[in-house]
Structure formats: structure tokens, C-alpha cells
Image (tube, rainbow, N blue to C red; front, side, top):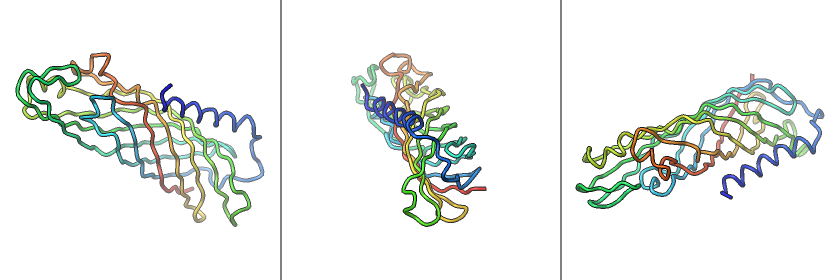
Length: 238
């Protein structure tokens, strides 16, 4: 079983087990009803073999979300995230085969760019941690499940263009609905401002490409492995 799937199963088990095993807490009050948050967001989404010569495996970015605390222990977040548009270049020599396509002409430099954009809806379960250890506001643990509409914006530039390179320069990413499972922690820093950190796993191995001979081959149309991310940022309650 793939590591990403194992981690997904563990996180989902923790989410369900925590809710079933522990009664919903009414001994503390949530410290906000609605909120707006901004995070620095780091992806680790490794490309599949072959694609790792064209597409980077780490992508910094940002995320913002609106949160609604509709229960002592639950909230819903609606947000959007995007990553930086990073590049990676590889040279395919004459008569070499790359991703199943042979270069029958001269050497070609291929530069790949990838940017991830995701609109997401997450349901978060909160539970108090370190109760009584701090004066004021106690930190809260977070277990999160959600769905995201993700697109990998992929562009490949060739020098020189045409011929062999045309198998790659027409490549485009496709939208896909992916699941998101996360675990994290948050706390207020002052009356109206808090901090949150959350790590997630996403089934980015389901992302596909189109518009290229390469993308039509079963062995190459999946561009990425399952991904991981870490978001750290601030939120304001209102």
C-alpha cells in the first residue's frame, strides 16, 4: 500500500475514532463564530518518474479561507489556495527516449512549469488540549476532512520548438476533485487574532493531463504521486 494511502487511512481513523470515543465537549466555549484566515502553504507533491525531470516536487504558496463555527466542536472552512509557478529544465539528447517518445532530431531543452490552484471545503473537528495549562485561551487540536477542486496548471516550453518537442508543449492539466485529510492545532494569541498550523495529505495521484500524445499513454498521463502540505498562518475572528 502506498505511504499516502496509509497516512490517509490513519488520519481518517483518528477523525472518526475521536468523535466516536469522546463525547462532544460542552465544558468549554469556542472562541469565535466566524473567522477569516491567511496561511503560508507549502506543498510536497512529487512527480511520477520521468515527469520528475520536468516538474518540481516542492511548491510554496498561500491560502485564505472563511470559517464558520457552527457547533462547539465543529467548523466549516471555505477557501482557496495557490502555489508558486516554479520551473525545471532538462535536456533531451538526440536519439534519446523520454516518457516513451524518441527524439529523432537534435538536442532539445524542455522547461516545465507547474502551479497548483485549489478551491476547497473542509469540515474540522476541534477538541481542547492542555486545558488548564494556560491562563486565558486553551489550544485546540484539529482533525479535518474535506474536498478540493484542484488543477495542476502545467506548461512546457521547448528550445527549439516543433518536432519532438510538440509532444510536450501542448500538454495541459485537468481539474479534479480530490480528498483532503488533515491534523493540526490552533490557539488565540490575543482577543481577536489566533494562529493555526495544519498538515494535510491529498490524493494528487488522481491528477491527469491532456492535450499531448504523452498524456494519452496510460503510463504517463498521471503526473504526480499523492501529496502532502503544511499550512501555517493567522486568523481573525469576527
